[in-house]
Image (cartoon, rainbow, N blue to C red):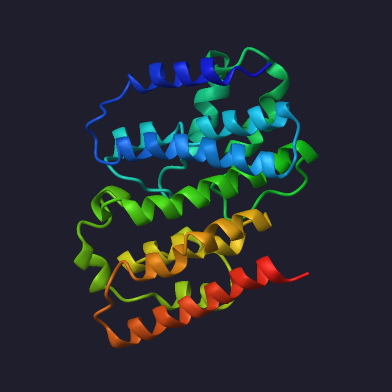
Length: 261
């Protein structure tokens, strides 16, 4: 049995370990609850059983649990030097924190696999059917809320320690490797991010790795690609041209995913 109410209570207790004044802390708390809700909605739209809907919610609650140690230790988000997914799995399953959130051990492997895979460039091969399903759900739920975060939050809180103000993005150029990834309709490898704009476009490129038609419809309904591209001016003329190219590629890709077949 999965008791979501009890799990939320335990999550609030867990958060008390940390200093909530750290830049980015509250953003990640709010993000967690939104991802939970997104995961639940996706699971419902997929007509899954209540057990899987509850499991999707629980994974959403726990998916970023390693982030709070990251922001406390590094004072920034840095997915290259700190893998928050694998650290979260360590906290949950090596330190046995998972038993605070769910007593039943039968879901452990699915939860572990889904969290481990939620931030990878691609899902690892040879997962069992349930682990693959919940990995896809959490990846979509997470990416969809990343778009909301980038729309609503101040840039300083989005990339603490990486981007200090709006002009860092507006004066930036786009690395060739990142641009080529978008042209190939692929997610951006985090190791190829160099400039502040690379970090921004890396988020936009999440659309190339959504798993469900409903997720593409959500992005289109919220007009996220246009909204996020238009959040900044681009002072370099070639960069401005590239961003318009990216706008066309991504919107066309979304329409193809929604309306094909």
